[in-house]
Image (tube, rainbow, N blue to C red; front, top):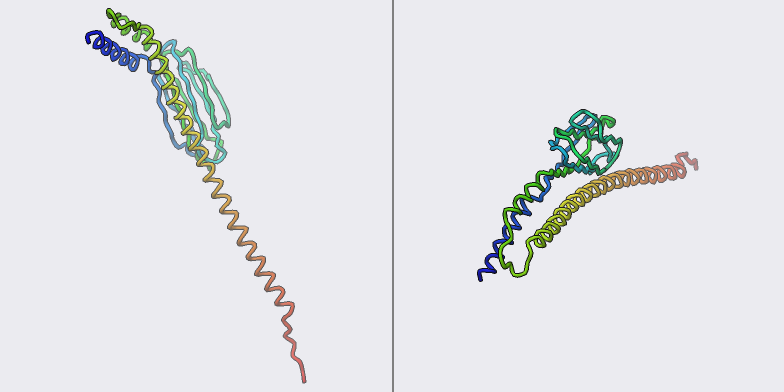
Length: 223
């Protein structure tokens, strides 16, 4: 029973370490970009880390925006024009605030709905994780389980779960964009179908009136 209890305590400590130390910081945001305007967001980063940025235009005419990433020193790291989506990695990063900008100034009338996600990975997480693992030590007689094997397995599972969550977020953004596109196409098809029906009715009424006028003889007959 003591071995099982020590094993349970060790597994609980392993889970806490993995959950707290090996999680990259990520954030997602959906916003409305007005016509003829530009919006910028700022993301703080540490030295020698990494930033992954993914964006999609999920609604709006043309489904495109201008995108740029500016370093803390003011250098343009990424510049894209009239794109509907993109994925970019900045590695290694410098200490400071990175500027993430979405530009819709080329569109004078149409606003855009934009989704983007920022995944920030700091090297300090790994260093803290190693310290916590070192503090755990390896208990005696762990029922032939090695702490390193458990650590590697749980890290792999956690990375895959985190990646799955990120992929589900991206797929939801794709689904929202496709739904908005389908609704916009449905409105256009319905509108032009109504216009064509009105034109056909107008032509039919005009033809009936013209034919009746041809056979309408108003001359008087004298008997």
